[in-house]
Amino acid sequence: MEQPTKAYRDLFTLMREEPAAKAYFEELPAEVKEEMSTHAFRVNSLQDMRTCADSFTRQIT
Image 1 (cartoon, rainbow, N blue to C red):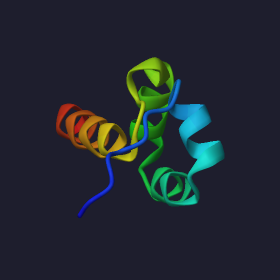
Image 2 (cartoon, rainbow, N blue to C red):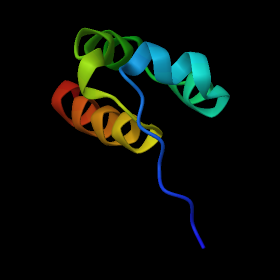
Image 3 (cartoon, helix red, strand yellow):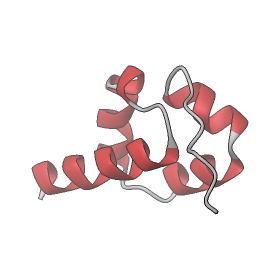
């Protein structure tokens, strides 16, 4: 059985608490990182991070 996704306060808390989230963020293009940081309050889980990264990537390209 899959465990429910833990929700964090924001992007920065997520990266501080979840090494996988920090590693994922570090691999993103600079433009996506900047957008995601601007909207940090919207990112409360690794799934949120992936969804936002996909969305911002589509906007940039």
